[in-house]
Length: 199
Image (cartoon, rainbow, N blue to C red):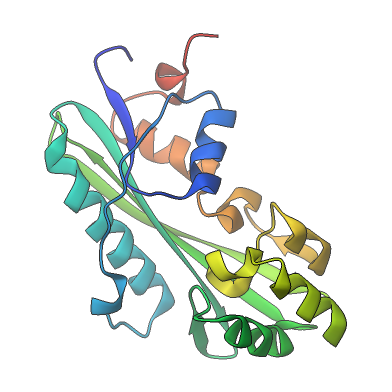
C-alpha cells in the first residue's frame, strides 16, 4: 500500500531478507531495546514480551505504518537460550544441543499505527539437531555465525548442515514466521499482497 509503510523493528539481516524475498518493501528501524531487563522463565511469554517491547518503542515514530517486532529463543531441556555470550558459551551449548531436540520460539508483534491496533502471537518449531562431532562444533563456532543467533545456530547458513529435521514453520527458525505474518496482516484488515513492492 502506497500510504502505509511496513517497518521492521529490528536490525536482523535474516528477518529483513525474509521480508524482501517475499516481495515486501521494508524499512528497518532497530529498537535498540535492552533485552536483559526482561526476566521471564516461560519461553513463549518471554519472546512475546520482547517482541512487543521492541515494536512499541519504534511505533510512535511512524504515523501510518505496520510495525513488526520479533524475538526468538531456543528452549532445550528446560533451559532458555538466546544468543551465546562468547565462543566458549556457544561450544558448551552445542555439546548439549547435539543429538537433541529443541523448540524454537519466535514472538511476533504487529502494530498498526494508523488504526492504533496491535496483535501478538508466538510460533514454535521443533528442531532436531544432528549428533555433530567436537571438531564440527569448534569449526562452526570459529566461523562466528552462531554468535549472532538465538540458540547458537543459523538454519539459513552453515548451521543448516547440523539440523536433521524441523517440525513446523521453517522461516520461524530464521526469526520470522512468514505464514503467521500473513495471518496477522489479515487480522488487521489488510492483505499481504498490499505490501508487495512493484517489480
